[in-house]
Amino acid sequence: MKNIWIIANWKSNKTIAEGLDWVSKVGPNIPKKENLKVVICPTFSSLSEIKKIIQVNGFPIMLGAQDLSPYPIGAYTGAESAFLLKDLIDLSILGHSERRKNFSEDDEMIAKKAEQANESKIIPLVCVQGEETLVPQGCNMIAYEPIWAIGSGNPDTPESANKVAGTFIQKHGDQLEVIYGGSVNSRNVAGFVTQQNISGVLIGNASLDADEFIKICQIASENF
Image 1 (cartoon, rainbow, N blue to C red):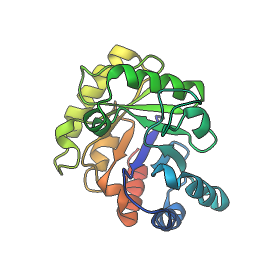
Image 2: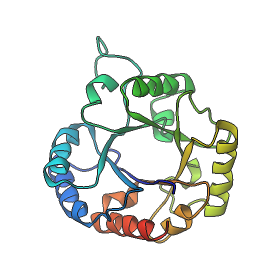
Image 3: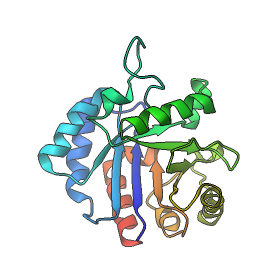
Image 4: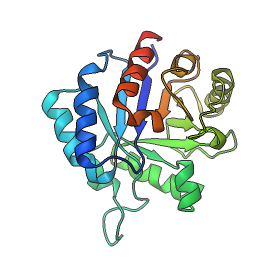
């Protein structure tokens, strides 16, 4: 049975206190199912405290970062290296369209970040915007996020996303896990996770609401 990944990307939202409150609500309500992989990606400032509440309560939640540095430890002011993050996180989102647009990240930089993640045994989740987007070597998980669907309330259709996912798998091999991102919510998540080539969802705005995120996890769990 394939894994189903439910990944929350909080972006630049939630204080530490708000994040802890969210986790305390969501944690006890996540279905405990072996192949359901729930990940939350809060702000860097919240990672340590959220790690503690997850561990103390034994919540079935993995922790992720929204980015990491393309460089190792050293004289790189303002950068969070994979080596320094590896004791906190299991996964890192890389190459999100907002990073590409607002911070001018290109495929070369994203490939360097993926390499740093792999060296520290952090899962690199590379966001791709279309079939032409480069998948870095050593990357076994991607998030297909058509730019026009992000935050628009108009997601791609599950069938179309499944077709794109299939193209990536055909090109890069069966080991590649493809998840979908772009206006995912509790009303449409079942359509995506039931597709043959889709292994979960990356959720932005809808992940900020604890009750909505619980619904998404429960519906996903019931549909695979």
